[in-house]
Every structure is written in structure tokens, then in C-alpha cells.
Image 1: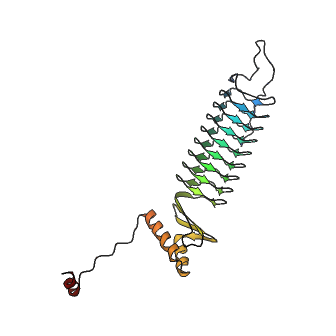
Image 2 (image 1 turned 60 degrees about the vertical axis):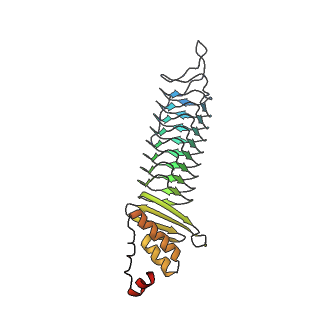
Image 3 (image 1 turned 90 degrees about the vertical axis):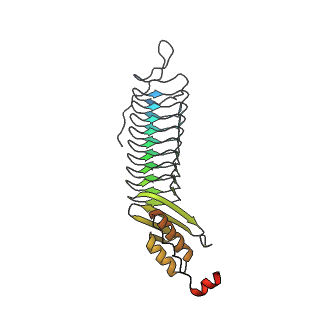
Length: 272
């Protein structure tokens, strides 16, 4: 992430009683900027925005209406925040990031260069996004989540606390990962989670990606075929049948329906 250069706001008044601001910057009279803030050239701030102490905005940033930035937030050059966004304390955005409307970032979040967040996204505390990440609308990340470079989360994805997603991963619409889950270098096409299938309380996670279906259950991590084989060997037929049915549904391959057997002469007499 590049170091941004800003023009420090000189606090004082001109001959008409207005604030002295950087060249080409637009700051409404009802937006609150505390002392020691740094506003870059050509920044535009919406109405009734509130900046915490010691915030720094790079050149050409655009902040929507009713946005709130906590103390010591740093925005790179040409960043854009939609309306009613809220950034916690000590958040850092790289250059040319775009944040949609009604987004919330917890304390100490770090977002790399050229990232895009859709509307209504929520990031917990201490989250980190690499460069060129994209989040769809209404995505939610728990505390201390990490996304590598070039990650894509489609609309309404949810990650629990301390999840780690490697470089170049993609999660489809409405994917949900629990706490401390991780994936590296995969494109998630579908996702399913089952709890307490046989009364034991075990949680089973099935993830479909372009190379097949992976299963996570307790200490087991492997293919769907290996999981069903292991489950049958242990007498856990419910697990095996559910995962088999799920894989068949995802792949569009269903076992053929049994053909009706011809009636014997005895059965014919009974039916007659």
C-alpha cells in the first residue's frame, strides 16, 4: 500500500471569517473537522460529516453525506465513501477504494488499494483486506477476518470471527462461514452446513468449488467420497446418505428410479 501525501489543513480564518482549506476542496459549513486533521487537495466532503481527531485524507477523496470517521483514520488518494458510512478508530484505506452507502467498519480495519465494498457491508474490528478485493452488497465479516489479494465475495456473504481467505478466492451469493474457517485459492460455487444430523451435535460443512466438493466435519477434511466412505465404515449412514444426496443435487446426477417389476401370475390373481 502506497504512502499518501496530503496537504495539512491550516486552521485559521480568512478575511470573511471562513476556514482556510486546501485548494479545490469542498467542505460544507456543517461538517465537523477537528484540529490536526489533514485534508488533501481536491477533496469533497458531504454535509454533516464528522471526522475524529488526527484523521488524514489523501488528494481527491469524496466523502458522502452523514459519514462518521473515528480518530486517526487514514484514507489514501481518490477514495470514495458513500452516504452514512461509519469508520471506527484507526481505520486505514489504500488508494482508490470505493465504499458503498451505509457501510460500517470496526476499529483498526485495514483495506488495501483498489478495493470495492457494496452497500450495507459490515466489517468487525481488526479486519484486513488485501489489494483489489470486492465485496457485494450486505456482506458481513466478523472480528479479525483476513482476505488476501483479489478476493471476491458476492452479495450477502457472512464470515465469522477470525476467518482467513487466501489470495484469489471467490465466494458465491449468501455463503456463510463459521468462526476460524479458511480457504486458499478456491472459487466457492455452493455451500451447505448441517448440524446435529444424528443427534451427536457434530457440525458438517460442505463446500463446492470448481475442482469438486470438500467436506469439513470435526477433525476430518477431505473429499465427499472419502467422507461418505469413512462414515459408512463407522456405521454413520445418515451422514453418508445426506452428503451423497447433496452432491447428487449439486452435480445434477440422481440415482435412477427403480423400474416397476412385472407382476407374477400369483400377484395378478391377487390384484384381480
